[in-house]
Length: 423
Image (tube, rainbow, N blue to C red; front, side, top):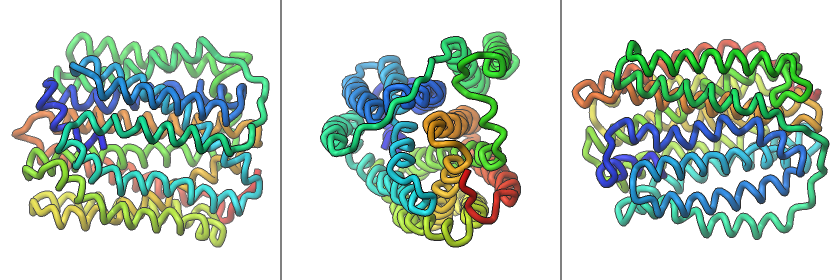
């Protein structure tokens, strides 16, 4: 919904492409930086309580986004919204792990769980366009009644077990500092040049902070990202897949939404409608993912799904030259199908490779890699399309980069166990 609204938000609040990037990345950045903390929180207070806390905070920050009078306040509210979302995600995955200890049933449950993403894409894009045509603030206001309904539904969920877990303060500070500096450097580098003093300084801080973070995790008594999680082969393979998926997923929605509105002059409503066929097929892919994983193991849907995404992304390159919304909609279908087939399966690889008591932490690490991929995609691709005169060339370069990255991770995914392995 927010991607569809970006052009209108820019027209009203100003700021150009850089502001549009920060509206997305302020959310994604805090989402990524706090996921590891959120995984520990879910283990410590219980997944159900953590999810309730995240929903309540997300609802309040959505209202703050809707009421924002300036671009700066909107970006700040979006950052807070991302922090709330970070609390929600690992808790929701941990609840699935608790409810379905059997690997086969869990694979099917994760497919149904992932349908939420496909349904939100189906409803979100056209609804975002419709809401934006009235007032872009409705894109955020609609979360308020949805959040209230979620809290009521959560009352029916059984209490979650709690486990002793200590917070890693040093690791949290370093992760936020490192990721913030990295995203700032990438976004500003695309506009001011990567030789600019502040950009060089930001990237240097990012490198130092992230290196220090790894050192703290290796030596700390209570690390937020225990490095022994990486001993599991499936877990190691899943992380780059999640990163590449989000580069392609966040990246193509951001790029195509702006292309349809800024280059083809479509209204927000019509731009949202272009995504509907892909979202419909994605629902089918989510529901198919569980049975396919149970029949063939995770390797088949993960490799096949990423390969489908590559086909769609490559097809989008000549489709944009034709400037046909119908052709763009057709090319988006394999991207949606591939992602919906691969992600539930690779998520099952993450959860099966760790003990139950580490489910929250493992899912947080996995989703951190995913969200960092999304933040990097918006920063880099946004820089490539920042100049209106070179928008189309930057769009095609971005799609090629995403397709290449997915090709590499699809090849790596052939090393996943051919059958689901329960750890």
